[in-house]
Amino acid sequence: MGGSRLASVILVLCSLVVKAQEGRYMVFFKDKAGTIFSIDNPEQFLSQRSIDRRAKHQIVISDEDLPVNADYISQVSATGAEVWYSSKWVNGVLVQVDNSELSDIEALPFVQNTEYVAPTKSSSGGRAKRIKSKKDSNIEVVNQVQTNMIGLDDMHSDGLTGTGVYIAVFDSGFTGVDQTVPFEHLQGKLQLARDLVNRSDNVFQYDDHGTEVLSVMAARQDGVYQGGVPDATYQLFVTEDVSSEFRVEEYNWLVAAEKADSAGVDIINSSLGYNLFDDSSMDYTIDQLDGNTAVVSRAAAIAKSKGILVVESAGNDGGSSFKFINPPADVEGVLAVGAVTSTGNLSSFSSIGPTADGRIKPDVVALGSGVSVIRANGTTGFSSGTSSSTPLITSLAAGLMQGYPELTSNEIFDLIIQSGNRSESPNNQFGYGIPHYLAAKQIMEGGEVHVPTSAILLYPNPISGDTLKISMDIEPGQEATVSIYSLKGQLVFQSEGQVTYGNNPVELDLSKFSAGLYIVRVETLGVLKTFRLVKL
Image 1: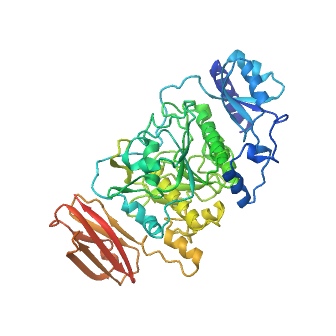
Image 2: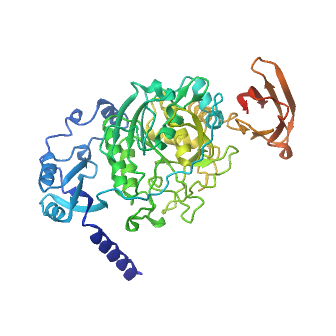
Image 3: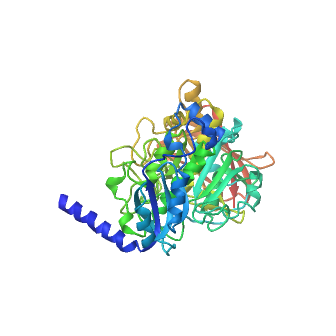
């Protein structure tokens, strides 16, 4: 066994040597000696929001927070290497070099070691980060299923739309965000934008995956779409290179987290994950999903240690041979999000746990199959994947941060998992289940935890067929009344009776209903829930 492992290491090293004729490398330094910055004057390198967050969480500012020694960077650049960016958390720089320059760098007395992370130019290939299907749907507000499932509608009724909360979004591009109506209100609320893949401040190009992820949180267009927290302040980072898949993207994630931290972010939303690469020597194995091995996992752990809540997609490998979560979802305390269907069943693609060291993952789930999003051209569509369920949970977290500003990020994490509908019996498919704003609110305010709204699901919505289903998580024998009204307030349908195992979900025949918008009211256990229903 030991010999095989050694042979594997030798093969990996040989592979890296062959590929090291030219490329991008991380250069790690031995220390930060001689830096002009001091932890006694953190305002020189951290924003006031970042300093305040540390104070709130009782986090000590340390040498890890100090910028990289500028003289070290200059000496590396003097070798002929092109310096792309520096990382204070791992004390190093990303450079683009050929083999001769690399040896000159490694000879510098303050250099600890180097690591090959990508070729010089992006190669074709790469792996999809989400499962995605789209179809047109431009009639009225179409995202109520996803918001109702976790109580974002109730959160909005309490006036919580993300005001005062700073959210960083790491993705592959945000095409159309600067040009389309659903994002117009974000003018003045985009605090920071940086493309780390192409070293540019223009994040509004290359790919629309980030656009759709952002829309779940931030988009707003009256009568068309309502994001989870449209009044939050956003930071947008391109860290994912869709043309290839190399470890450099993990370091992009790391540097983005540092920049977001310095700018005072509260939450990182990351719909990215890493386990397989175009260079197989970089791949992570199942036994490395321990939260401490992958570069991106270590980066997320550091971000968490700074008081940032990291919300991370579990991954879309549930239907593959590698069915487990992708780093950095393996980090303890990082809120890993799986996906469910509109009926609450696990989505077939949703990655599962446990971690290599036996911890339950994902932590929670939300709608991930058929999530309503805004496209790059400003129209609505649908997308599937844990990339889509993650911003829903980020929205819930941001609303709770606004509503309970005294809570730390760790306390928000705990509150969300405690509000899950499987909090008493978590597993490695659903984690602690589907969280809900009302349950979290009741935990904070005392009393028995009861989640009436998440227990009532109406689907499909919009409906193009004739059968509408209403699922109610109530004990058999309980009375329920379903009423449907036209927009003019006219009662057009009503049904009442006992709900049993045999008729749950309740099925309603809408074959005689004309196309249009209806109001559906479901009343059970003394709770009234209202839905807007679109009949196509």
